[in-house]
Amino acid sequence: MTNEASLAPVALSYVAALRGLTPRPRGKAFAYALAHVRAPELLIGLAASNPEGSFYGLVPDPAVLNQAMLQSAERGVGNVTFLSDRAALPKLDYLACDESQNGLTHVDRAALFDLAAAQLKAGGLFAYTYRAYTDPTDALRFLVREFAPEMNAEQAVDFLLEIKKLGHLYFPTHADLAAKLDQAIAKNLPDDFFALFDEGDARSASFDTMVAMRTRGLSFAGAGHIASNYIELSIPPEAQGIVIECRDNPLYEPLKDFSSLRSVRTDIWSKQPAEQSSDPAILFGGFVYGITAPENKVPEQVDVFGKTVDLSSPLYRTLIALMATQPVGIGDILQSEEGKNLKAAEIVSAVHILIALGIARPMRGAEDAGAIGNLAQPRFSGSFNRYISTQEVAGQSCPMASRVLGDVISVSPRDALVMQALNRAGLANSVSALLPELERLAKDPAASARITDVAEPTAESAHQMINDAVSQSMVQWYAYGLLEAA
Image 1: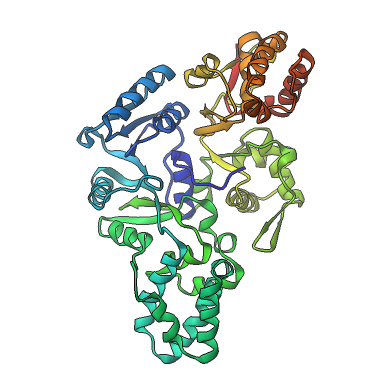
Image 2: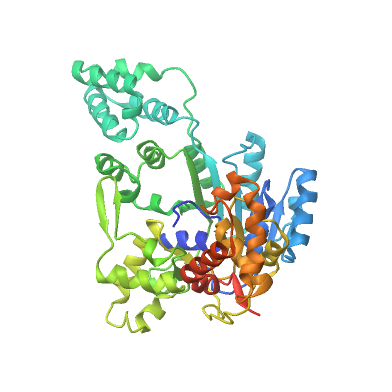
């Protein structure tokens, strides 16, 4: 289960659909570019997971460019191209950039925004991950410097009370400022508190980005962190009323930043004009939806800011049972024996909640997905995944391409070792293939401890490890196209 932002095409299209933007038809060819690539494997994995797409990586560093081309060749992924000249790009359906770890210069950022405006097709999506603030105090400073000068005395006092509510998550870890805020409220002296923010940078990257995008003909299409599109799931109840009242205020997103303490944002922007619809079938009928965790790992309730979201009802348990087995579309659910008495509207609403909670994910889907195949002799599916068979699995998770998810799946090292053994020797001889790998790992106790709690590997412990993984995950490995029949 995850609630982090994904830069995969299907995830970007789903978020935009929440805003009424018609998604690209399933299976249609598209062009996707990732700017300022520093980790080529992500883009190579996306390309392997979306064979109908043409992927491009803009790489400013010649050393990384050479590494990227070598990696794509090693992985056998032919629909990805790495280049340094943006002039060689075609018109794009998707453009993405993640500068959250390595910030761009002002000049490079402006050039990136210009690229989005010039290179995206009408309705194309630009996904931009960045650090909105270095410290949450910067967000508060920006709000004070923007709002306070325009207020009369009465409004200023009210603003102090609103800051206290907006800072429900902030002030418990900033006791000194909390005390000064309480003093200013008690003495009715708002300027005493506002003066604390007279010095220092008062910029908001989220606000600056909004201004830059709108002047370039792009409209906000939602947050890549899907829960952030729902006030009740991303902001404490104490602040929700204030934020909702400011929905039409230009500072709406900075207010959300401060109240949620979310310093890293993934904003999705749509090149105008973009096709829109209010028909749920058009907006959400082209996706399939799945849960990549075993059904027994899905909770019956989730706490959000002290409020419990109950997932134990027959509707949710039915959807969870179906999606944890294999990805399904809304039509599949309605036609199933379990879902025949459900209504389309309630299914769509419940699926949105499961996705916002990070339990389910929107997916690309595949016509050949879901067949279990040959249990006796499974093979890694696709050249990207077959590369694992040549590698030594250590204590880190392994990225695997999924044409069903349309994204990379992070597989635990324990599962990767079992899949590797099945690929090499088949189910009948998998113990003989796994045991040497466990013995190799045992020479590094720290790495071994992250994978298995057995200090001295034996054939019996290897057999148990295979049985546990196969019984819990084999169906999903096939359903997500990680394995295929020999």
